[in-house]
Length: 403
Image (cartoon, rainbow, N blue to C red):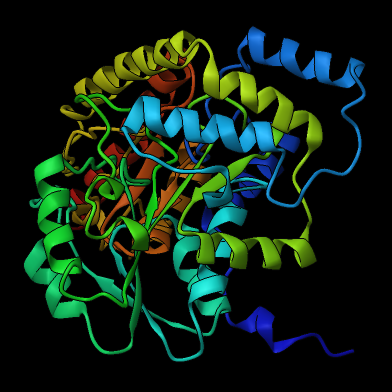
């Protein structure tokens, strides 16, 4: 039986693949510590859960408008004004079944066969694959650990061609934790102002998990705002991964295009989630900031630990809940049984030897790096890094013996 060639255009997300492999080992009775998935290890705040219960009891259980209830879209506008000083109207907002669907809607709505989409590395694994699904071309612009994994205006301008349809990035960034400052975004905006046909897709899902100050959105610059498509959602900042609600803020033409696509794919997202989201977006943010404080403590602990791990180079993340170290010094080394040739080998070695899951950097466009999450308990983080250090020490000893 034949299946569509569409499936050959893109790969399975390595984040989900590593989580799956970890579960398989766990099912065999092995104690695997998960540092692979990007999910807060917190429960949804109580006031949001109570809003959902009320919505169930009030029978908000029917189909909703495709872009979301009006009060939800108004709540998104309120949040954007309160947190980002951005003015949008409900017709600019489309709510979806998670920010991943928001991204898919956006890319399919604006990218066509042969178009180019610029993506600075490292990037979230799904960005490149969605572009491929749209039959557009991924144009990677490589950044570096030394540059803080930030694209420069000169790099951006050099990458733009007559075929460029969009620029896609995240701040705070998954996987690097990079956070762009207002001045850095302004410099990029100055480049975009020269190219009026280029859209800017700004993934801001980690907005509240910021360790260095106020979140800045590239949509604040008026001369390009109409071409900026903000993607955000509730999964990370509100510990609502399973609730599945993302949203975009965009010009009305793009919003209507996304609504049209979504109307065929999934219609609206869950009615109960939407009602809970209104409360999440418009009321007390203290639980979100409390989570960020805990992530900051874990970040400090991980940075303290890795100072003692030889051969690992790491820039402190300014946001999100990952570290993304360069581990290439271990390539070519062996424990006598397994040889590390690349980041995939490195990740599989840690999974099978240390029983710690992480994600290979190739998936994010940076083959010298590996992503470790610190969205796990402090106890598990400390246990995991003891195992990692022990496993890596075996590689060092084996190489010395060979020499």
